[in-house]
Length: 148
Image 1 (cartoon, rainbow, N blue to C red):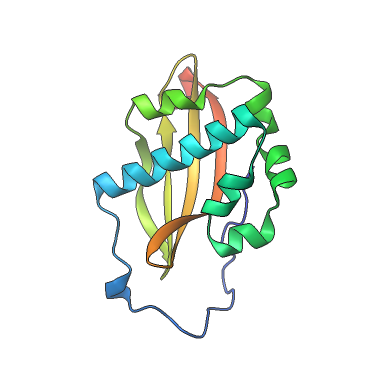
Image 2 (image 1 turned 135 degrees about the vertical axis):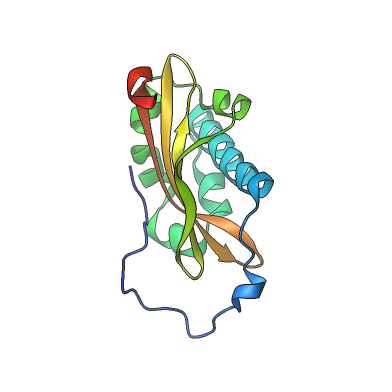
């Protein structure tokens, strides 16, 4: 389900925002980013409308994904009737320390240990228009044994 993960060696925009203006998200900000993403996917799955998820995302994500494609990407989780709203009730557990993979791309990997099926996540955020926006997403249902 990975969408728009940054490819190594891709061309950088000609105007770079100075790193000092791209703050590293703190723990609270990072949790808000992740929970906001999970809520947006949950709402999209419930309504069948992926336009808002797409519109809230970074421009590169929007270019590479239309609403119909996103509906296909999340069909597996939607068809399993996984309630992603439950991810809002628990803190994310990071499998790898959140890190920059490019000057303007921040990656977060981990799991929401919810029952009966945990949700693994691999999220990319791009600094755009003064805030972090979703740039790439991979959500995977995990058996509780795998998540521990």
